Each structure stands twice: as structure tokens, then as C-alpha cells.
Amino acid sequence: MAHITRTRQSDIIDAKLRVDFPILDNGFFNTKYIGEPTAGSVRIPVRNGEVVVADYDKVNGVNLTLSSTTEELLLIDQDKAVNELIDGYEAAAVPASLELDRLDSAAYALGLTMEEYLTGILEAQGTTSANTTQSTSTTAYENILKENNELDFAKVPTMGRRILVSPAFLTSLKLDANFTKASDLAVDMLIKGQIGEVDGLPVFKSLVLDANTEFIISHPQNSHFIPECSADVQLKDLNDGKHVNASALQGRKVYGAKVTKAPTVRVKTFA
Image 1: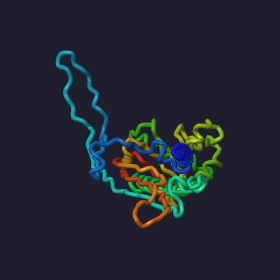
Image 2: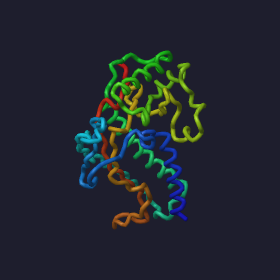
Image 3: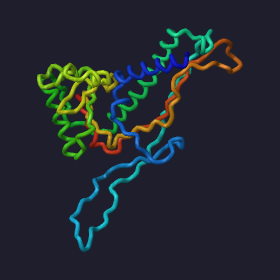
Image 4: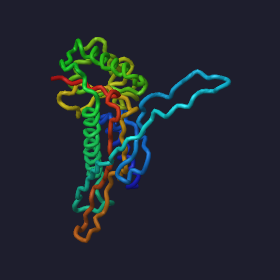
């Protein structure tokens, strides 16, 4: 019964994290790689152009072309864990209310650490807009359209683009008459954390963007996130020869991330 309860609690926590941490569950990164993550690094495919299309000659055929996909190294250099003492209770005896509270806190803390890291990767390794004028309720929507156009110029696929906005920018955006309000979205989109659309692109609110970052428009084609291993947060008895009648809340995340083509990520800041 305890195992079933914990599984249900884990599902509830995961649903909450999808709303609080949009990057982790809404396709801002891809997870394709070559190699073995446990080695500490993997190779990731980097598309440097599309497959060449040529006219076909029925007699001579068509010339061979070389692949436009290369490989880059991505380090698995983030290793985070929680290990919190629960004194006075063996794992099976921890009250349900206490267990749920600590599970929720641990999952949130690990999720926040990952969200901050991944958001920072996009901010640091994307392309920062030359427009550093702070957006207002009359320019917020227009500024997204302009940065989205930059992705068009870079021939970034439209399908898959996503927008991450700060709370302050979202306020300006909601006051812009052109914005499609969240109330127009389906309930399932709201559950996943999407709060609107601009130019057909889903919009998500971020609580961890840098203070001067207004929004990010990105595509996962060249934004890579490799989760090497994950030990789900759970209660375990402490059998270390030192603690008596005690357990610990433990969990671990190992991962790495990288943007391999800066033009696929647009970052709008203000001075």
C-alpha cells in the first residue's frame, strides 16, 4: 500500500512540476545523442544544413553528396542530489502527511535546480537581440513577432518553436490587445503550463529567467538536454550503523545540456 501511495503522490508532484517548470516537460530541448552517458560525455548530432536536392538524370543518375550533420561533444557535468534525514521514523512508518510534504519539497528543489540550469543555457548560448528597449503593453506582441522573424531568416523550422516569458513581460503581453489570452486555450494546455499563443507559438511563463531577460523563443533542433540517470526521490531506511529508528529522503539527477546553433534561440533582454 505504501508503494502505491508513493507512486500516486509522485504522479501528483510531476503534474505540479509541469506547471512550475515548463522547460522540463514542454519540448524546449531534444534528448538525442550518440554514445554512453555514463562515460561522462556523449556526442550530439548537429545539423549544418539540409539534405541536398538535385535534378535526377535517368541516364546518369545523380551525384552523391556528403552529410550536413556533424557531431559535437556534450559533457554530462551536472550531478545533483538530496539526502534529508527523517529522524524517529523508519521509512514504512513515516506519516503520510510528512512523507508527501518532504516528497513535494525535494521534487520541487531538484526541479528548480534543473530549470535554472537549462534556462541559463538558453540565455547564455542563444543569440541576444539587438533590441534592448524594455517592452510595453503596446510593443510586447510586436517584439515577439520581430524576434520570431529572425528565426525565419535563420531558416529554423516553425513547428516546434516555443516562447518562454518572464512574469513582468507577461503582464505587458496580457495588456496588449493582440495577445491570445490563456482563457481561450483548452484545459489540457493550461494543465501543461501553456498560458497563451503568439503567432501560433505556445507561450510559457518562467519564474527563473534572468532579471533583464524578457522572453526567449527557441527550437529544440539544436538545444540538447541529456539526462544521464535519475534516482527518483523516495524514502529509505538508514542502515549505516550510526542512526537508529531513522530514514532519509533521497534522490539524484545527473545531466548536461548545450545549444549547438545560437541562431535557433532568440533571447530578448532590456538594458
